[in-house]
Amino acid sequence: MPPSTTLDLLSLRQRAEIVAIDWTAISDNEGRRLRALGIDTGVSVEKLYKGMFGMNDPIALKVGRMMIAVRKSHARAISVSPVSVTIAA
Image (tube, rainbow, N blue to C red):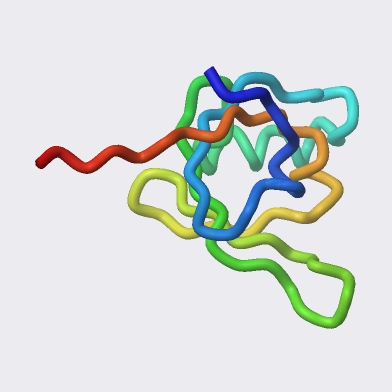
């Protein structure tokens, strides 16, 4: 299993599985919103885009068939394990 990292440090177009979320780093209201959008432990995500001009905020993610945007501070609270994609011959 690849080592875990945080979602904000994940490479673009990289798929990963959420392994832990530091809910104490996110307000209750924002945590409810993230859960409603499908962000939780065990969920597969893909980092699609990040903001421009040095701030890299927000970060666009693919969660299931949806594309959502999260703040960099929230992405920093989400630990992920990169997933290797293998193509069957």
